[in-house]
Image (cartoon, rainbow, N blue to C red; front, side, top):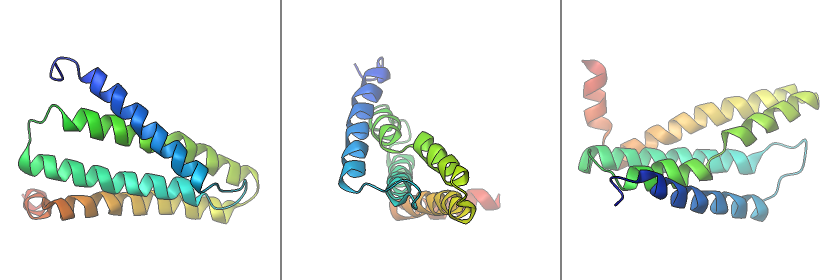
Amino acid sequence: MHKDHPIVLIAIGGAAGTLVRYAVSRAAPVGAGTFPTTTLIINVTGALALGLLLGALTRHRPADTLWRPLIGVGVLGGYTTFSTFAVESVQLVRGDRMFMAAAYVTASIVVGVLAARLGERIAGTAPAMAQEDEA
């Protein structure tokens, strides 16, 4: 069933990921105008998890039709949150916290990309990817 209906897997995973994100944000609330550490942690851990997942799938199950839609698109898509990152960045700018906004945006992008790459390396795909980059 999942091969023909990945939308069901995505919906189930998305609901689960969204609930986890909500729980994390409730457990570690951040006040308005302060550095949005909770969203940064959510997005970085989501990038790490996605790197791990995709790295493992690339190495072990390249034609996967279950885990990528369920976990990659659904759970991690629901867990991470670009929209909150964008709104928090705008709020910092609007509150004249330009340095904090720049630090948040930079940290989110740089640390997020590094976390995704670390996930791939942990999953064991780094050597193959390095060879592809050199070609």
